[in-house]
Image 1 (cartoon, rainbow, N blue to C red):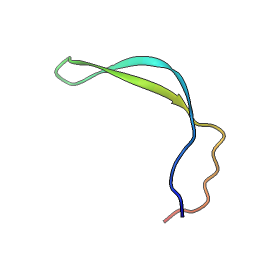
Image 2 (cartoon, rainbow, N blue to C red):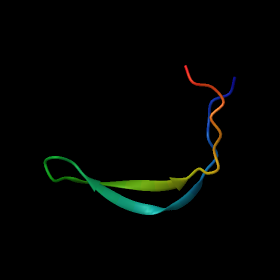
Image 3 (cartoon, rainbow, N blue to C red):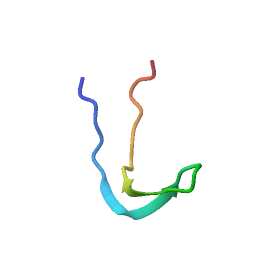
Image 4 (tube, one colour):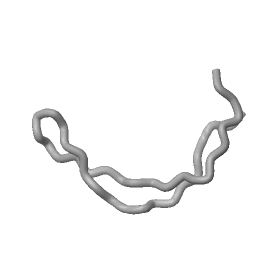
Length: 39
């Protein structure tokens, strides 16, 4: 069974840690998705 997603880069933003440090993150659009199994 293969595990993975195919997505498209939507943009960049940042998140902040509890001590105030800024971390750049990439926003990826991965829709539509279908759940095929829940364990």
